[in-house]
Image 1 (cartoon, rainbow, N blue to C red):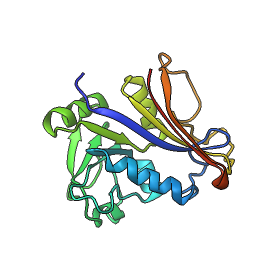
Image 2: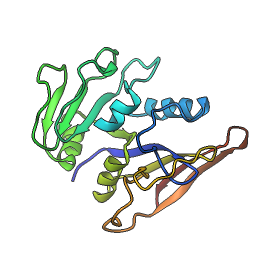
Image 3: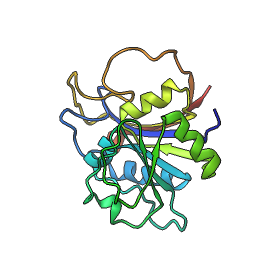
Length: 208
């Protein structure tokens, strides 16, 4: 499968959760974490996110000050997205919607709709849109799908030791706890930056 280089970025609570249940909106980590998020976005050609995360965090997937904005890619089973979502009013990169199930969305939305598998979409981005670096910002279910394809090259985490979410239904970096991945995926620590004053640690991993 031809695909872009793929990185992910997530913030994880002290008990290994990326969100609470019911979902907690973004903004629970530090300003330093937000600045790091924008820095990671700024080095990519396209940003990928699941519909649930997009709507919970009210994401616009933009990079302030960047002349050429990354493509904004959304994954959804049905393609249903609130037409009043801020992503549709915020200037930025072209919006691409991957629909993996039966399409039930609004065809009038100003998006390019793709009806294919995640693997097929990754190949489309690489071959038709010349995306060399794709950056995924969750949620856990989407990250798991990428891991099942063995398609993650870099893994960036903010370990937020100041917060506990708890709960069996709270998502981890690879979704709601359940079955193991088809196989283990090995990574090496690329950087480790503890920030005791804010109770966070920035860690980056790369494929071993």
